[in-house]
Length: 98
Length: 440
Image (cartoon, rainbow over all chains, first blue to last red; front, side, top):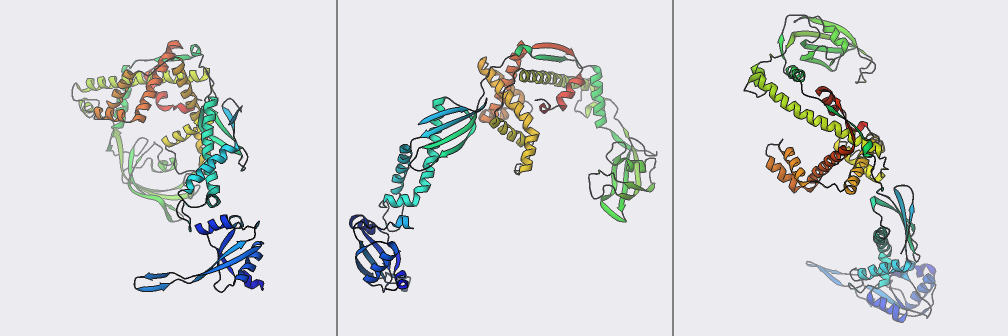
C-alpha cells in the first residue's frame, strides 16, 4: 500500500462520550476518515502513524445533516467514521500525542 | 508545613515555607474535580467530561492558580505561627515548583522594628518668647501700604522705583524676536523683572521719549535661542509714574473692612491676628524642636517598604506628575523625597510606639475642639464638621494630628525647656519659610 495514500486516510480523532467509553472498555479508538477509505487502508494508516497493532476495523457512513437557513435548503457533507479495535497491550493516547 | 525564619537584617526577614506534595496535589485535584462539573467540551454533555481530558486542557492553569492560592494561605499561616507582622507586601520567590515534589518558596519582607523610645530628658527645646510690639504692627501696616500703593504720572526722568508704560520692539538680525514686542507694557524699574541692561537703556528718559539701543542677552539666558545674542531694541516711553503709598487714615482702615475707630481699630485687629499667628508660630517652632530632638535621641531603622509608600504620598501632594513612571523621574522622585519620607516614617513609628508604651490615647474632646477650629474658617462650620465625621480618612488625619500634639505636650513635660527671648519677625520667618524637609 502506498504511503502517500495512507497519510490521507485519517482526518481527525473523533472525540465524544461514546468514543471515550469505548476506549476505556474495549480498547477501541474512533476516527473520522476519508469518505473513500477502505478497512484495510484504515488499518494500515493507524498501524503506520501510531505504531500499534490493529485487531479490526468497522466503519460507518454518516449522512450529513440537512440544514435550513430560512427558505434555503442545505446539506452537510456525508462522512465516514471508523471504529478501530486495537490488540491488547496497544493504545493510542491522543492527549499526549498532540 | 515546615516554616523556617531567617533574619537578614534588623528589619528584613525571610520565611521559607515547605508544603508537602500531597497537599499540593490534593488541592489541584479538588480544583479539577469542581472544574470538571462545569466545563464544556465539544462531544460531551456538561459534567460528563472525563477528568483526564479536563486535566489535559486546564491542568497548567489550575496548577498555577492552586499554587498561588496555597502560597498565600500557607504564608499567612506561617506568619501567624511565627508571630511576624510584615510591612508592605512580601516578595515571594518560588524555590521548587516541580510536580510531585514538595512545594517550597521563600518570602522576604520587612517587619516593624522593635524599640523603646528613650532619651526624652535629653531633648533640648528652646521656647522662643516674644510679644507683638508696636513696631511689629507698624511694620505690618507698612507692608499693607506697600500692597496698596497707587501710581500717578509724573514729569520726571524715569529712575529707580518708577513705573513706566512702554511700547517696545526687539529685533535680532532685523527680525522681530518672539515675545519681543509689546504695547503699553508696565515695567517697574529696579525690580529686576527685566534684564538690567534693558532698564539701563530707558533710565533717565521722560514721557514721550523714544530710544534705540543694543542689548546683549547673557550666555545663560533661559531662552536658549537668543542667549548670547545681541538684539536692537526700540522703546517709546508712554508715561513715567511714581508710586505713592496710601495715607494711614480712616479710609485706609476702611479698605480693610474696619469701619469703627479707624486706625486704632485696624491696629487692634492686626494685633489680635498677629498674636494668634505668634502663638501658632511658637507652637510650630517648639514642636519642630521636640520632634527633631526625639528623632536624634532615637535613631530607629526605617523599613524601606514604608519609606517607599511615604515617597509616593509626598509626591502626590507636591504634586508630582502622576504619569511620570520612567526611570529618570522615579529616581528624581526618590532623590527629592527620600530624606523627608524617611524622617516622617521614623517619627510616625516613634509616635505610635510612644503612644502605646506610655498609654497616651487620643482625647475625643480635643478632636472636637480641633474640628471646630478647623471648621471655623469655613463659611458653614456645621457642614464641615459633619463632613469630617462622615469621612473616616479625614477624621483619622485629625486624630493623628491631635495625638501628635498630645505627644509633644507629654514630651515637653520631660524635655529640657529653656526660654529664649525673640521677636515676632524672627519667629514668623522660619515657620513660614523652612519646610520640615531640611532636617533628617
